[in-house]
Image 1 (spheres, one colour):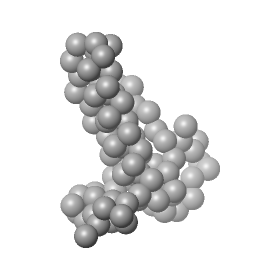
Image 2: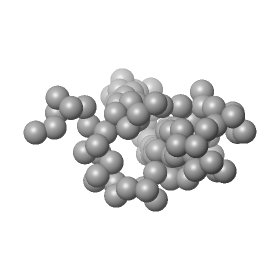
Image 3: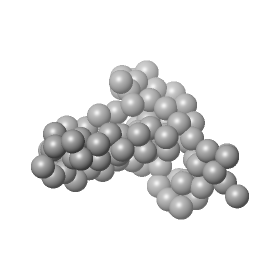
Image 4: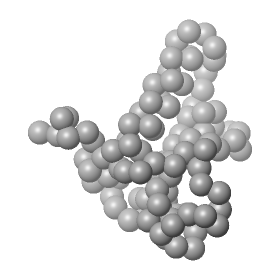
Length: 97
């Protein structure tokens, strides 16, 4: 799980994930790089899709994102970089042409 408040260092990264929109259940996971964030968010999305396909869920709407610690609080990463730039920067190097 994510770093407890008060122990994060400036520029630490974490992702957040809501498996079922409309709930207030957020999961936070520490990540060490943009690539790891990209892979983790993709993995969580694929897992939710799998649960739908095998009938564990009748429907769902999920969401997630990346946050950076600015030294005082966690802020959304898209405040720092455009989303398209983040996806390109985070994409595993073997997929970038």
